[in-house]
Length: 152
Image 1 (spheres, one colour):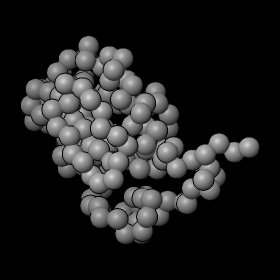
Image 2 (tube, one colour):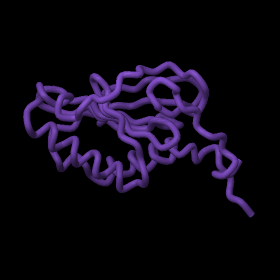
Image 3 (cartoon, rainbow, N blue to C red):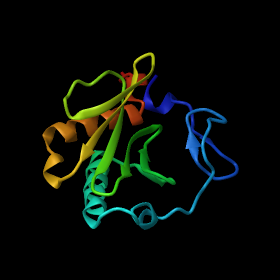
Image 4 (tube, helix red, strand yellow):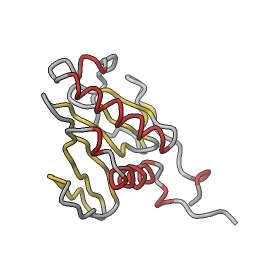
């Protein structure tokens, strides 16, 4: 399957959210503001998120979706997100393999080769080369690159 043969995304008729298959569970809540999400956090947490978002966008085109407790990013599928806490930012990634690093405090096996892994960010210097590599790998999952083959 190459990029042009990936099936089109399904659009929810109620909220306009797009998904890889019809009727995937989601909340149709719209209109949430990023500032509201960070209202109970210390100011540096929003600064951390802004840096996180900048790094996500350096990977390529994305859609940011603000939800009640987090902001997520997607290309074809959701691949990264962040949840603000009072003094730090929880960042999560969607991988097609278990990524070994002591920086991940939580890992969820979602079935087959799907993993969600989470790290806590407390300072801008934690957005280092390792972190950027995780983002690039997760972005490829968001593109569904694992389903694509090169056209001849």
